Length: 580
Ligand code: HEM
View 1: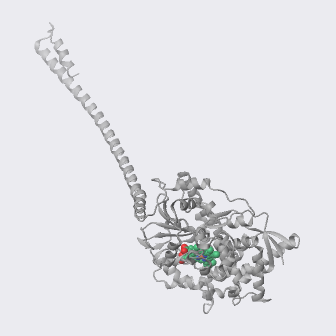
View 2: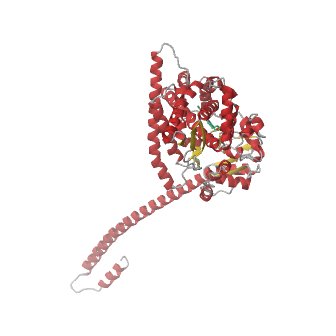
View 3: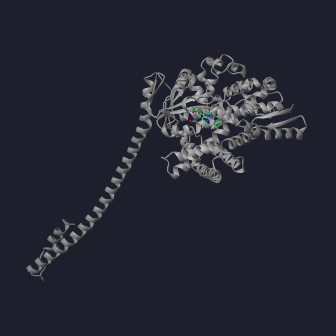
């Protein structure tokens, strides 16, 4: 336009007869000035439009760069926290000759674990005693560990994406773990995080100083002297089960009854722990146990060992979390009601007559000056939750497995019965007779060897540390698979997969080559606090059942161990009971 105007003007410069040269000049000037103004206006409009476009483009560019930067940062962060952290650990382990399956960047070996699990053999539906006994639940529940053990040996490393793990099933190394008193090995935080609704920050979840302090308070309640004082309660709590089973036999044909044992054993266990540790056997106790069981199922549905691996899984996990949260609140308020009831009882009495676990926990919370009001409440509720759960579930499940193995081996029921008659005669079982009941102890030890309810011992290196001659980098999680150690023919001999309680006739130290590799109650400083309590309760319950009934495995029993935080019979244990 700027070029065309002068040309036009030039054309009009041809003089017209009616216009003077002056007026022509003025017109030209005017036209030029109008053209100039129009041009300027248009120019400014275009400039404005261009500026706006430039601003939009620049904003888009900034945004793009920010997104690119965020992605780069995220990738860098993932690389640093996921890959580099794990790769550094792997390098340190490789330098010590420890190998393992090659991991993928984001998910480590999880896809492979899922693939191996999907292809794993289902437990055979055999009812042959020898096949059931020989079935190592690791092969169906954790088949990847077995596969890698065959490929890489008893010590190898694997990854679950965010975490690097060390599988430790070499007896010498487990022995070292047993002997270590270091606080540098704690419970793996990523596992215990998922158990928080169940166990709070109580004894079995906490680490370091917090754990040591809680253990000091709770441990004395489970020393053998104290447990001996609970024998009467344990005998009394088993009576309703015996009466119920007798009634079942009467109701069927007066001789036999087909019984599913698990819930009845849970009730005994729950009653024992409620009365022995919390001084109550009330409806509230029953409600607490029922809710703990629902919580246990909800948490174990989350595949809590390895975590949800995809978004759908995470979404489902979030939905389940609502239910878990509600159960957690309900359990806590039930426990708190029990605590307040106890406080009122104590306030009413001139001196505290109860010296049970609840009392110890309450006194522990009062004595600990570092705890504020809220922390005191947490301390009390969390530790009660720990004992309610740890104290009843694993003992009941162990009793179920013992009955399953005894049902398959009636000759051992006879041995127990004979010894009971020799030791007790016609009198009731009491604390003095228990140490003489060697046969039932051997049966329990053998059952815990073949079917340990706790499948793993797990630890996390809280600092760089050393076990035996292996340097363990901070953050590495250690896993020892208990049944694998318990069925190792190098430790137990060629008959490791057979039920032979006689191997324990002269104690654990003579039963195998490396006694520290027998770990149904765990290892080292974190050894199960309630092992005396559990052993005494199991002895009493089994002795009383065997003294009243003989039993064989029911044709309705389906052998299918399931992992629900502990390994329990998926469909329960069903036995054919006969009154004697
Ligand atoms: C047959 C029954 C039981 C079995 C198989 C069993 C097994 C275990 C195992 C394997 C551990 C982990 C140890 C480790 O990480 O090294 C443990 C810890 C624990 N158990 Fe048991 N347990 C049983 C019964 C009980 C009972 C009856 C109580 C309490 C009344 C109890 C209370 C605890 C506590 C509080 C811990 C945590 C100890 C700590 O971290 O310091 N357990 N148990």
